[in-house]
Image (cartoon, rainbow, N blue to C red; front, top):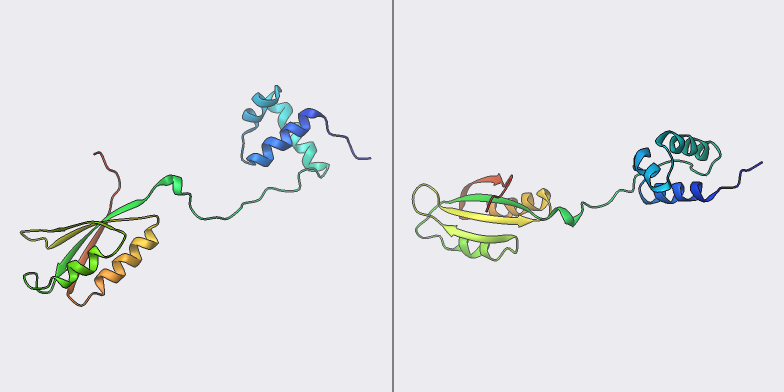
Amino acid sequence: MKRVLDKVDEKILEELTRNARLAHNDIAMKVNLSRNAVRLRIERLERDGYVRGYTIIKGMPSTDAGPINALIFVYRKDRMRDAEVVRSVVAMPEVISCNVMSGDLDIVLTVEAMSSDRIHRVWSEISALPGVLNTVTSFVLSCTK
């Protein structure tokens, strides 16, 4: 004989449906029971077939995490005459700044994308440009200003 669910069981099922990883203690506070009582109710709901399993819904990474930034140092074959590399990289939407440098560095690009895969594809496009001799890429770990 199938057991009829009470309001507490329905609330537990509602909370588990919203977040199956919710701790027993968190559910207990929401339904005004002890952690152990919630654990026993969940075990009974599983045994009676009201909860048949827990699943993962695969998706894309959340955009809440924000974009990923990287610096790409570009060395041109002819830094004095090759402006085509600069024209090509500034046309890329992920390139948010392009600085032509003096000294040992040639061009420093700041790249912003929603995934490291996209930054890798941008790097591939840049390194394949005819005037590019070499590149070095560094991911930004943290930004203090």
